[in-house]
Image 1 (cartoon, rainbow, N blue to C red):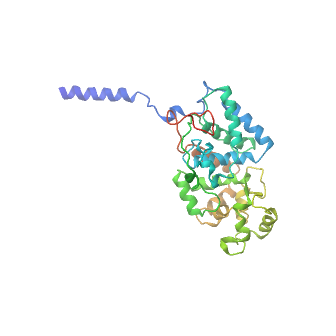
Image 2: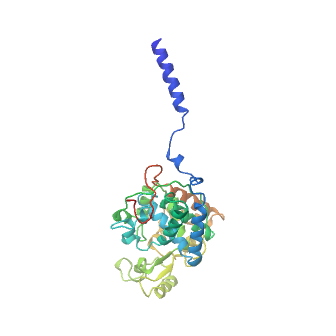
Image 3: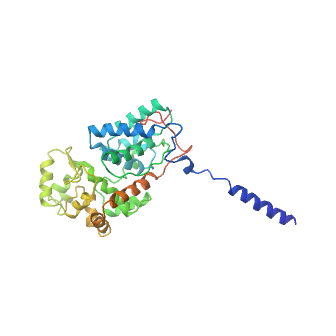
Length: 322
């Protein structure tokens, strides 16, 4: 009988504990996270982002790219924003990143409205989404409640792809972040509104792989145009030569006609593993790319998130709290 009572006690205890809702990160991570503590957070982010892009259209791509570089290192923890010696932001791979001033301005406004409440990681993911919407790109849900990390290491940022990698390296990097080959192709589509400095691709025009000749995978007319545009290494060129101000699938069509600007762009169409996915993007029904991009951005935004007591809410996005 003692064993019978013991078994009954254990069963009742199990049922009681099962009825208690577990405390998980999801409980501290939702679209309405700031509903009570900072109800105007989305409006403030959106107003600031819109004002900046109204003045400089190219910041839309920069903000989306800034989120990628944040999430692709230690996760979406705002560590790319930390401006300290040997941080992610100081490495050469990050030298062309832009949008920091936008984030700082948003943070200052939020500190006035609701001090020490909204993390910089949340500001960044919200700003990237609004940047897409402002240029009539896709929408994706953005859960808030992220916390900022306190560690930022330059050598870790150097592992982020920067335009010269082969497809195997790209696939492996994305896989290490929980992203698949479709995500690689889809997120590369953000290049449809991006620019790159001539220094990142000029070797394809003048001295491909040390041959002293152009990259044979470059369309000849396109190559001549690039030569004219690149009088200096710091000159900027649109990655989408056809519709650089429209969030569309023309970027993929350009790859089919040998007009991919970066080595990594054109390689996506030359590699048999990824070429079919590029072709699918070109032939897909209207709205398919946008839907896939939204899904990929949600996956990107969930990488390595810190919630609850795992991180902090800094007063200044450039610094950790003292």
